[in-house]
Image (cartoon, rainbow, N blue to C red; front, top):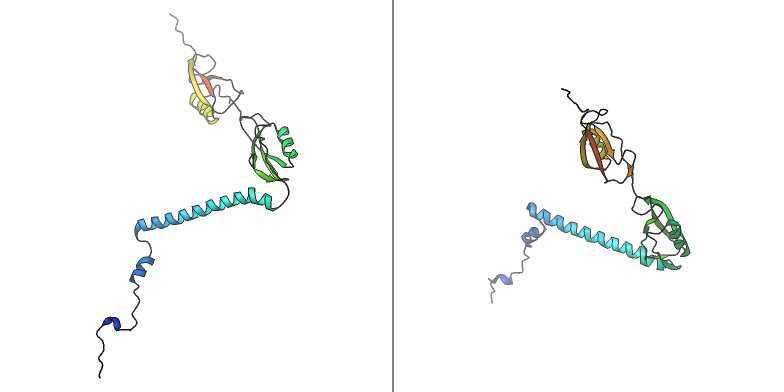
Length: 213
């Protein structure tokens, strides 16, 4: 019996060309400003998460795992912030820790007191570890500059550049200081003050001109 080719397309086993249009649509580059912004946002989030995980891992390894893994005794950094330096040194050495006092900065604490300890107090560390101490240099004081006799605008500019605040201003006659020049400053020049303190100035009106009739 003679057989005829089937007209059913499903019975045709001829290989078909792969449909790549949809694949091209998925893989194509971002189109327009919105597409690029989305791509940048995704990359930025990924980098941020990676940095955060790296910092957390470093913290855990440095302050928890490493002291235990390397063996030896473990202790805690004592609470020494705000103590005089000699007392802080004794506390660290009593626990077998090595103090490093190479760093100092201005602070409200008196000179020679511990401002900060690194690692922070309470942190678990290996005995023998170096502890960095930031020692106070005392308050940052400046001298009131000598602007007496200077032009009013120039003198006030110098005072403000030193970090001082111009407070009240008064005007008075003077036979020695010319008109519109600084006659006096309070506190007087050379006084030790803090940046941000207020100074008062007196401005000369020049000599008093009295007319005699």
